[in-house]
Image (tube, rainbow, N blue to C red):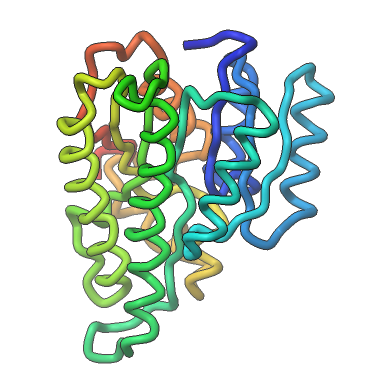
Length: 251
């Protein structure tokens, strides 16, 4: 699915896995819309990097926890590029390490609003633009899940794990719903990946602590996750929908 006219939107695209997807997407020939919630400097720096390498990109602000922001974000892509061919539901949060009996309702509502409801609403907007039922030309959606969806993250982030379990089910259901409308929907389940998300969850040493528990004895890289995402977006995966690809080093 490479080609200079195709458009890719990545939520949470300014850092970590999202930024790696944007970079690799640009190399594959996509025009890239880099979504960010608050870190405008990081998003603009990535856009400048992509442009310097000969690609085309722009930054679009939007909090996926807000329906109004989501609608505005997709509207901005419409105005900039006039089409949408590929969409990655990457934006998400993790909270500080806690047991379930320590979690309050505000934490749980924020987790589900951003990680689950936000992903649904973003996919809704993508389907409206891609589906042949709505006059679109088809496309591909990749949701970013997590190995936590099947491991449960006991004693750490059961709420996060549950939100990603919802993403797995959502992926399967949406894939079957739009299979005859030119849209493929798949997911990638990263395992322990060396990104800033561990520090944001209050555990900057988490990669080191888990290293010896991993079959490959190392964390994954953002580029390894991005490669799996770009495969699922591409025409090479043209008969693949409703799939959930583990990128977890065997964990």
